Every structure is written in C-alpha cells, then in structure tokens.
Amino acid sequence: MGAKVEKLKVNFKTLEEFKKFKEYGIQELSMLEDLEANMVEDDSESPFYGIYFGDKLVARMSLYQIDAKFDRYFYPPQNYLELWKLEVLADYQGKAFGKALVEFAKSFGLPIKTNPRVQSSGFWEKMGFSKVDYDMERDRGENPLVWYPEGVEPQQ
Amino acid sequence: MGAKVEKLKVNFKTLEEFKKFKEYGIQELSMLEDLEANMVEDDSESPFYGIYFGDKLVARMSLYQIDAKFDRYFYPPQNYLELWKLEVLADYQGKAFGKALVEFAKSFGLPIKTNPRVQSSGFWEKMGFSKVDYDMERDRGENPLVWYPEGVEPQQ
Image 1 (cartoon, helix red, strand yellow):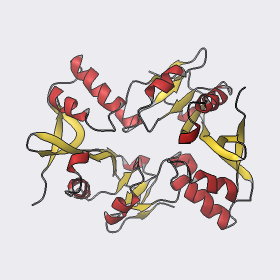
Image 2 (cartoon, rainbow over the protein chains, first blue to last red):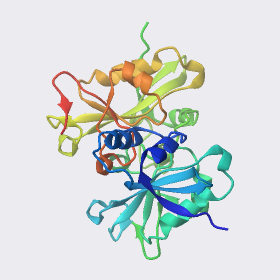
Image 3 (tube, helix red, strand yellow):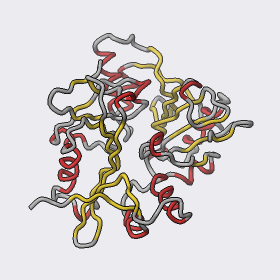
C-alpha cells in the first residue's frame, strides 16, 4: 500500500504541525507571520508536500521549480526541481514515507537537485541520486545530490 | 587569552582532521580527490580557517567572498562574505572558539551571510547576526542570518 502524498495548504494547523520537524526554520516562521498579518490567505498553496498518518502530518518535503535560465547543474539546461527539508518524524521512519515523497518528486519528470542536511547518502543513492562535481563558486559548501531523468546529463 | 585563528592549507593532514567534523561533505571529498590527482598543489590555499589546540584542529569555518554584482542581501550592494561550516569539536566547546572564528570573519569589515545548519540562533544573536526577510526564490529553504557592519542595511 503506497502512502498518499498531498500538497499542503498554508493554515494554522499545518504550521503548527511543522513545528514537530527538526528543520523548522525561517521559511516556516515567515509563512506564519504572513498568515497572521493576512498577507497570505488561509489555505493558500504552499511549496510543501506531505504524508498524513490518520490526521497527523508525519513526513514532508518542499519542492520548488527553478527556471532553465538559472540551471547550472543539468545538460541540456532546463527547468528543474529543488527539493529541500525532506524529513520523516522519528516515530514513523522505516515505513518508506521518505521514498514515497522522493518518488512523487520524480513523477514530474524533471531533474532534481537536493542538498541533504545530514549524511544520508545511502538513502539518496538507493533513490538513484548521485553527487555532482563540486564547484565552490556554485555550491558554496553544500552537498549537492542530483537525479537525472532519461536523456539528461551533468552540465560541464 | 584569545584563540589564534589560522588560514588552513590543503594537505593530507588537514583533510584527515576535517573528517572529525560533522559537516564533512562533498566539498572536502572534492578537495581530497583534487590533491590525490595532483590537480591542486600540496599546501595550497583553502577557503577554511581554523583553531588548533596543541597540534589538533578543534574548530573551523569556511569563508568565501561573493562579488557585489551577485549581492541580494545588503544595501548598498557590495562584496560580502559567505560563512559556512562553522563548527567546534564537541570536546572543545564552551571555550569561545566559535566566537573567535566569527570575530575573525567580522574583522574583514564586510557584511556576512551564513545559513546555520542547526537551530543555533542564540549563539548567532549574541554575535550580532539577525534573520533576513525570507524570500523563497532567493533563500530556497535556507535559514539566512546576516551581520551588517556600520552603514550597511538590508536590501529591499
């Protein structure tokens, strides 16, 4: 049984659930401030996708499409997805929720770049990601891992 | 007694010491590969600064100067420093080594941007850093904290 991946809406319930994730940061604080100040509407679109277990959010990631003109990772240069804050709550690990999220991201058919916070290279390798040739000016201390769909190659 | 901050050279000893730091990643692997392949000379310059305790490297950070034309954080737009991988080995924390590194970075008189990996906002606040107004297109899930020298303001 595959886990259902849902696009998350910006509302107080979701933002409260985000606080359980380790990578809660300035992005989430900013979403909360915008909602409180009515700068964004309740239930508006967010860049986050998640998996619910019952009515509890137990896994999430953020996806953001980068325009081809900024592409410095893929050849031919093209629109690609940046994936960040992939995280499964500790009590819900080992149930393939992380895998379900990554497979969902791949289903768009675009190349993907991520910068995993923890040394989780085993997981990302199993998901078909590979490391880039590090370029300090471009990568600035990141650990970029990428996924190439059919026909896409590293940018030289 | 202030700790002495040194610019680190690329050599096998330094790269071996880097392995003790949690944030060892693709950047360091790439430095090691370049050294092994003679693509960089032994003892060439690295972007890292560190503090030794005896002959053991116990704290480090990387500093990289970004050109004014790419500046999207400061007003007026100007050259600034990106600081990453600030880390003090667990057994050597509480000795103000982190503070010594950040003060060294400030001594260049340029604005600084960092993206701390852990929620260490208390430390950064004490060091005079403040959070930016989050911009998803620019910040892509990062937690950017910045330090403004006299006369420098946030970019609008």
